[in-house]
Image (tube, rainbow, N blue to C red; front, side, top):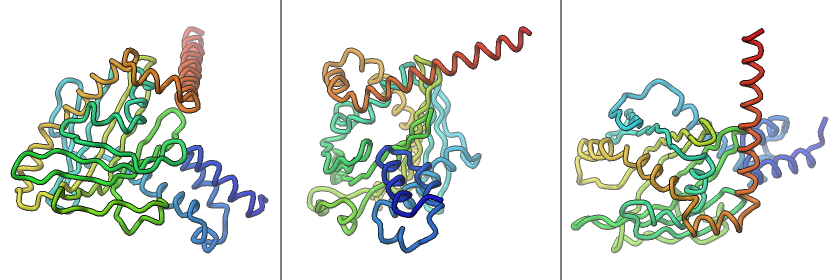
Length: 294
């Protein structure tokens, strides 16, 4: 049986590589709950795996109602015990998974393609795919601008990548080892992301499936919830349209190409894994065809 010290070190290493669910399974071998409580990384493994699993379960369950279906994009909604709907958006992007991942990884470029985003500041970048971000969105008069402090992390699912996002509160500053910016009501209202997730999966070398799920409170208390729901339902399919547009230009965009070149530890690994995945898929398909012929 593996000793406690080496087991903890292995869980830490798995967490560093974003293999969150593997780390959680390994953690089940640890008998002492007090050891988990005393180790901030082990606590993160438990908490973050729980939220990631919740998002995966929500993506796959059948409790969603179809709102719109157009341009190869489906928008679903469901009630979550409050007046604001949760949304699920499913679409196919005619670009490699590599391109789509680059869009989400380069957080400071979000404002170049996200409507009404005034600024997007990276407050902390830890591990491979963990970001703490402050985003500010321009709102039309007489509304105050909207701001969100968002913590996002990637989960390596083997052939797929899950991105988990939630908002953070100032009292959580110890978790991030920095002082989080205070809310300034004179400038903007702070939104809450109860949960959000993006599941990115390859369909073929040139096609990618993207599923987005979210439950967000924009803090528009004086605006009727039915109006907010109607607007978000009608506008949500544009998210996939925007991703399609940006993904199609990654190979010619100088900014993205330079960053891809400079970050081989990230993009080189993603490229090699994608190539290996499709090689394996082709081999399995060839073997199945041979069996059918025989």
